Length: 111
Image 1 (spheres, one colour):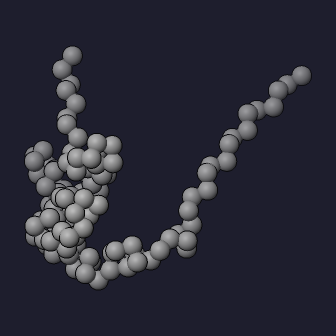
Image 2 (cartoon, rainbow, N blue to C red):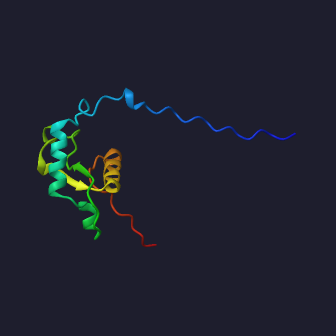
């Protein structure tokens, strides 16, 4: 007798956007938007891509010292850098895993 094909498990329910606090309530109000605009105007190209010899538009204003580490530097322009989405994801992931808010070390490609 043929067997039933395996059933796909339902994905865990993602939090509904309506349940989230507003951007302003999460700390991204007018002052943060202005900080972001100023950082991206100062550094319109991704600083990480430039260090790698590529030219990519910066789309994220990243805090060099994360807000979680020093909330008083949240709107400090010297605490901002322009990065692309790709590098921001790498930096954020590295911070969550290691506590270091920089790009993870490059993997050695030599055998």
